Length: 523
Image 1 (tube, rainbow, N blue to C red):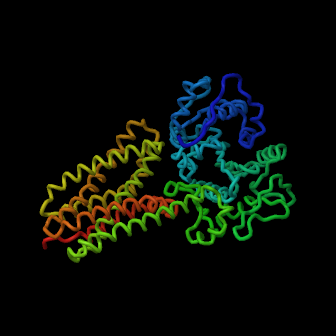
Image 2: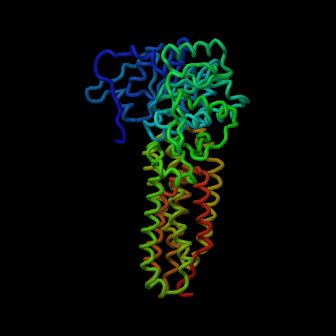
Image 3: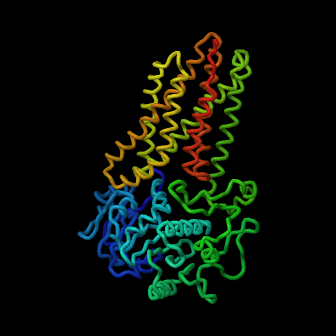
């Protein structure tokens, strides 16, 4: 378990609060909508949505334990009474939306959906929002939440993602299709495929005023004399939070973001969230880290992960250098001049293997809509198939470089095909039965893992001669040290550069390893 969740207790539901919440805004604009709700909130979100009035409700709860609790009960919490106009599913909201084009009046992402499972971050990408827009009926709304409790800049990145999705859908002016409503701690971006009609904007403004919420953006701009109910000052890492009169940090930047003219932030990366970089948090630019080190008091907790990865990476590099220096100045140094090739070859294998494995785990998390299953399946398939590849290396004894050339060509070809074709395959089968997706994932993983299993034993074979024994423990240690270093380094690359860069670096490392293939120890 990695989080606390709430479940319903026995007895009648208390839903009188529902119309007063920020999440109720789109329901106040739609009469008896057909709704796709992402995240059941232990059943509380379903109760609230039912109280707001719906004609049809499709709920997706991707967390298997919470879905089990809703369907069958858990301890004292009873099973949720599903009505005839309600369905509870386990697929991702993207898969459900893709399977029902023009099927919903409202697609509502629950406020806690992003944090309820790691794979849910793919539901907030520009590609996912594009799928939601295609699933709307005329006049429909996509309601996207983001927490601004710790840093308003998260709203900036979400607005940039919404604008990117609209532009990909052919919308020239995204600002005409977006309205933003917020409280002190939470924000909702309400997105339509058509420009917002004046009467609907008036209804949204009345909804906000009656509940002391703020409109941070509406098509046509905001009145200059509007009242700001919830002060949201911009965060300045030079002086802290700005004081003085009430301000709305989101309203100040929304026009530039939606128009695509906002200047880049020197501290935070506010580019759109995509499937290649599916991270709403992790905004800190590496160049700003020395500056931010003195302002950790106002740096939000999700951004500390970047610093933790950097610290772990520094420790792994330092300890790896210490461990590797011991044999390097002992028998290995006396054994010959092949240390450079050993360093390039076995170091490249250690980094490259983990880079490609982590890339596959991330892609499989989207494909299976569950990171735990993706991790288990990819890791198991990689271990088994790379073991088979290592066993097959015996066939290349005496012609190791030929075997390595074959493995490297397979890895290169696989990388190109995966980058170009795997996203389309995932999109085409995202709504397919889980068993089919598992089989496809194993078929995709097997050839890569088999090829990855060849280079390491082929390299060790080069030290079969009388002088090669000294290199063997160093080669093993080097490979292990690079494997440990690879995890924090890959995490940093994923957040800052994306999945494509991680895949490219993994494939490139195997090409470099081929160039550094050690000479025979007896040659």
